[in-house]
Each structure stands twice: as structure tokens, then as C-alpha cells.
Image 1 (cartoon, one colour):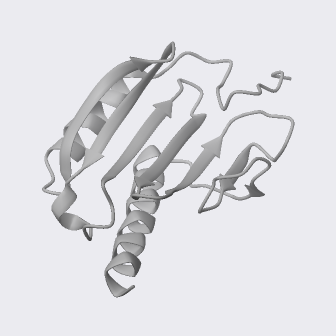
Image 2 (tube, rainbow, N blue to C red; image 1 turned 135 degrees about the horizontal axis):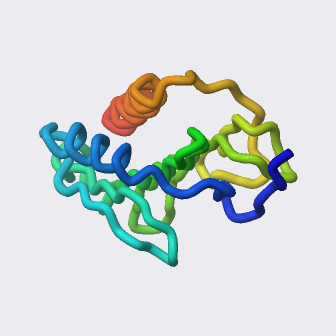
Length: 144
């Protein structure tokens, strides 16, 4: 049994080739202003800055960060910055003491514990699920 982690991480190493695949795929879309692999806080991750023109002016920044591990654990964090608040959520698959391995930290604050969930096995399907949710969020922002 793999021991739980408290930091949203996994006991496996980061899958850099998969992060590079995501970077190439996302970087080729108009919705993405920038996509780069960084070593943030000692964690290798893909950081995606979404194109500001897709959002109303009330959103000053929107980002997606992805950590994907060689055992298919992952952490995908969507975050919007507004003048007075931050709106965020997170899709996770990793061992932890607070939820099932697959779980979701709902908006607007992505609290821990989150909600148990079930994610697809294939990384492309997970990415599609996340991007569809982001698209619905953008539509909601424009309707407000």
C-alpha cells in the first residue's frame, strides 16, 4: 500500500513526457496565452496562462497548473484572479488522508477535504473533462 501524502502529491515521480505532451497540445490553442513547464515550489508542473480575451474584464488572470505522475496520479488546479477574490477548483488523483484517491476540490475555494469523484483512466480524457469544465465556467462568467 502506498502511504498517503498531505501536499496533493504522489509518491511517484512526475511524468515529464506527459507534461510536454500537454504543453504542446494546449499551447497550440488560441485559448492559451502561454504554457511552460516550471519547477514551482520544488514541484515540476505545467503552468498554463489562459488568454485574457476569453474572459470578462473582471478576471485579471486565469491559470491551469498540472502535475502528472508516472503512476497516473495527478493534480490539476484551475484558478481565476478577480480584483477582490480568487475562484479556484482542483481535480486530483493521489493517495491522501482526506478523500478517496480520485477526488475534486470544488469552487470557489477548492477546500480540503474535497468531494470523492471518479476520473477517466486515460490522461487525454481527463484533460478533456477539465477543459470542458473550464469552458462551462467561462460561459457562466460571460452570462453574469
